[in-house]
Image (tube, rainbow, N blue to C red; front, side, top):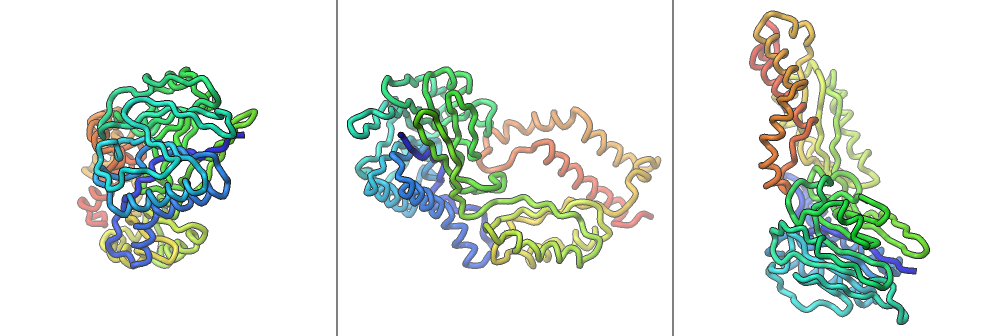
Length: 399
C-alpha cells in the first residue's frame, strides 16, 4: 500500500491579518499560526507513517522570505527526513526558483523540482510504487499552461505535482492556467495541485485535487484548512486532515431592538469560539430603532469587543437601516421615494453585471490582496448606500 500527504500553500512568513489593538496573546497566536499549521502537518505525517509528503507550491510567502520562515521550513523538512519520510516539492508564484534563499542545500530525501519537467520514482522494498512528475515556476509570473508539458511515466501510481490555476475553479488570476479537461485526459492517476486556498476535489477519475492552504490568512478563507491524506491500494482513498490554528468566520448578527440584545449577542462570541479560536468579521444587519446610536458608536463598540479569550474581531461592519416603513416611502412621490426605487432597480438589473465587468481587471491584478465583488457584496454596498442616503435625507427622522 502507498500512503502520502498532499499539502500546499503554507505561506510561511505570512503574518496574517492586522493585529493593531490586539493583546500580546492574540498577536502571537496570529503570527505563529502558519508555523503551527506546518507543525501539525509534520506531526500527522510522522504519526501516520506516510511514505512521502507532496508540497504543491507557495510553501514560502514571498520572494524575499524571512529568515524565520526559512529556518522553520528547513527544520520541518529535517524532521520528515529523519523519520524516513521523503518530500517532493515545487515552487509556485510566491516561492519561484529565483527567490532569495539563505539555505540552498536540502535535507536527505527532499526533492525540489526545477524549471524543467522531471519524473522521480518512489521505490519501496525494491519496487517502484509511484512516479512523481513535477515542475517549478522559474519566476513569479508564469502565464504558460505548464500542464501541457506533463508526460506520465510507466511504473506505479502516477502523480503530477503542479501549482496552477484551473479555469473555472477558485481564483481568476492567470498563473500557469490549465483546464480540467486536459488534466483529466493526461493519463496521470493523481494531480496534486496548489494555488487555490480552498481544499477541493475537482475530479475523481483521475483525482484532480487542490489541497488548499494549511492556515487561512484572510477573511475569504473561512472555516477549517488542512491537507489531504491519500491511500492507494486496490482503490484510492482520500481524507481531509485539519491543520488550522484558528478559523476565519463571517458572522451576521440581526440588528438589535435594544442595547441589551446587542451586548448579549456580543458577549456570546467567546463561548461560540470555545472549540476553535476564531477571527471574526462581525456584520450587524437589518432594521433597528438604534440606527443612529450604532452608526455614531461603531468605533466604540468595536473597541469594546475587540477580542475575547477565544476570538478576535477582524472588523465590525454595519449593514443596518433605520426602522421605517420602506414600502410606504418607496411608493411616495418624493425624493427619498425616488431614491429607494432607483436602488431597487439597481439590485434587479443588468447594472450589477456591468459593475462586476468594470471591476474584474482590478480583482484579476489584486486578487491576492482584496476580495472580489460578487452579488452578495454588491447587495451589501447598495444596502449601505440606501441607509446612508436616507440618513442624509432625514438625519434619522422623517420630517
